[in-house]
Image (tube, rainbow, N blue to C red; front, side, top):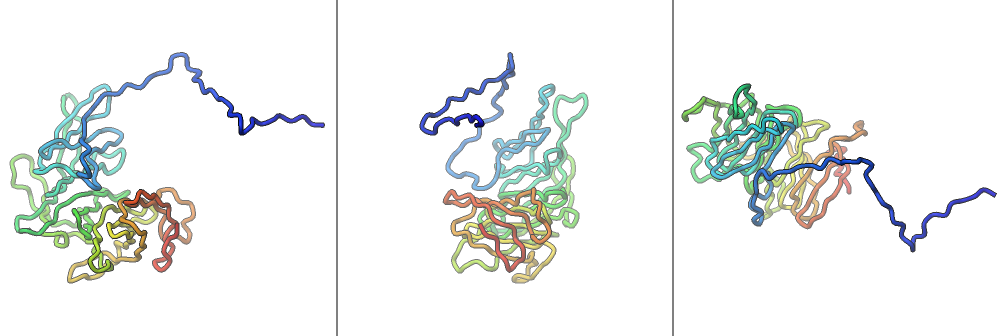
Length: 311
């Protein structure tokens, strides 16, 4: 008869000891860079700190942006100046890029950060400024978020504070003028309101229930086909858009709204998964949502506009 080895009894837990074989394990060393206060919901959706393979960026007082090089040999740094109000969001285009976008309620600025041989400070160049126009009056076009296109540094999305409108920026189509402030000149685009920005396309919600708040909290580009974007809303819906199809909404050009899915609670986050194998029939990849009730949900892909995803 073949012999057998008894498994440990479930009623008698077995102690397992995990021990490193290294004789002198290396301990990581850390140092404090900055302290960011955690007051109740000061920035609902933006990020005050961003990093990539080369730099760490964080917001400081008076609209300044601190940039620190991650190299332990140099640790160079600089301050980006120009914003008049505190930063609400900052984001690098990609992990290896030197292009950074920073947002305050009054403007969005795109920078290039770089090292300079023989200098003890990082260099920077402002590539573009999008700001509230002088004739915007009492119209609230405050900015809150910037979300980069997954592969094209000339495309980005701007989210407005408490608004159901998002703005698709194609930098090569913007109408700009040279800056008039002191210092190196850079292109400036003026925005009158959320739906009147020279050379931009909007995402305008038209299917919200009467009296509901359809403010956009988050946006995700589809990695399968970036013409499709997903938005998360305070009214508990997620909405899919097609940037290559447009419609007129009250005389304003908007991207085509394709589908709305009612989640049930206010949706704070949405995120398309990057890796997805079955691309034959799906319109998008699966995606995640996070709601105000603390629920994280994984959804099946959009297959057609008429076939909403399922949990």
